[in-house]
Image (cartoon, rainbow, N blue to C red):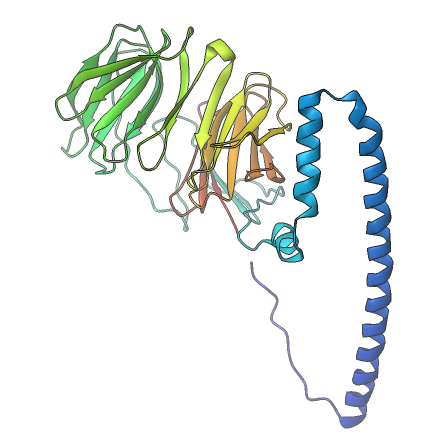
Length: 361
């Protein structure tokens, strides 16, 4: 953010005295206003407590406990924590204001968009380096549902509406197929790679989770995870825990927080649920109007994004889901990712566009 440059002048003694008196008046006026505001907030808190007391008897036992726990947590919030919540400088924000597109780039204060009109096209700007594209064929005309780039940046694993996973070698001038991993399931819906890049987990349309040894290119194990298609997957950063979601319970997406405490789940019902890894704490977030198709936590773990069939990109604060910003695209937002420095968000939509957002802190 830029600030307009200002000019400074030396004040005369008389002016300095006047300014001092004005400063005192401003101080007393501010103190009075602060007292009034505190009184208002106290009255609001009393009214909210009264409302809670009236509706609590009508809630189920489980919901009563959740409300009581939430109230107790709110009472324990310190002023330091409250100030951090209200004005956290590490909170990303995106300005909804848009200016007309220029050279394929929508420019906005706090938001930059780059939306190619086809999978093979690339747009660039002064702040975005240009890149070269390589078209990879995957089992001819089969639909691609998931792909993972290994940490070495040289190997790409692709899965979709086919019984085989394709491993591509990107190091050569022309990408070539290094290997194909064949399973009994007719399709793969999602992929995850172990932190050491030695194992690949594939979510199969038959509900199973296939475990592949990437070095030997063999199937080493298979979990019977779901009664319907396994739709999404994530793995902890230490590689010891694996989460999967399935169409048997209408879970479309999930993401594991890098801090190791929280798991976010996107539901067909349009809800986002944030669950604690070891405690019964759970938050339900309601901003989407249709099924939640993808989720991704920022690498700092303080916020995450979700996308949906309702064309929305939502950013939430971890874990309780305060809305940070929202952006509406022109079509269903099918996928999303966040850069390792948490400065960029990229989405893929149903109208064959990839949109890049620049996050301003």
